Length: 344
Image (cartoon, rainbow, N blue to C red; front, side):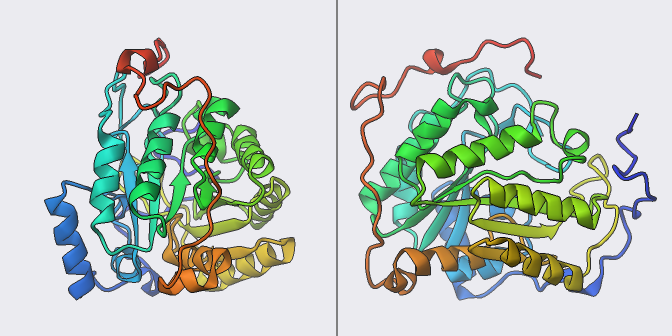
């Protein structure tokens, strides 16, 4: 059985403190735009995944007008071996005012593209889908020209919850498959499933074919080239339009070890392979992350060429009413709590 200290592939892992190769070294973020946005976020009591995950592209993305906001708190009900977010059972706790507060705060920032991501909330009946959808609604009411991506969990495969997010009409629906099929049970939480993730992505594209569907793969965890190409083919077959590939970096000694550092040349080969499979856009490189601003620029240009420079409002679909949801009011917190002994 694989222990917490063994690499998934069985090959000797790299020491946690081994110096990173030159292509993984970046300058510390800075500049007037970065400093202003960081100060504004602090004053609004908003914290981004960009900072929480210590993303190496934070300065570049913020300067380009892209930021990623985490919804539904900072405690995830799952414990994936690559992720540093706290694992636990929030027991149904969430802030019903969050959609309004986030929308008001983001409306004051000079952003062109916002990614709304979330922790997995298996303790909630809908997995947090309605909270995400209402945040998208609030952003659209205040900044109709703002492009919004929803990077969500799998909702345990409940496609009705996926539909709740889709009805809010995000510009991009994203769900990350994270790793190859073989590595999924070794790296992701036991409640995650490779085929379930593909099913969520496929459903999103079938229900909203006019929207972009996006996913992401981490490399350097012991996968083979054939496995990466298989994952790319599976994602494309599921209807995914945009894919990102990046290097896994171990957040702490308690997490899965890095098996190897994938070279920029290999990432370039994967990019060429992905385009050959028919993806509309590919971002592949050591420092690429799921919410990388290069993909956001592509989305802006495709939805409306002028929107990339902020000259026009991109076209968005009208959101139909959500069945079973009381107009003008939130469901009570107790109605959203999932009672499950399987939660940690």
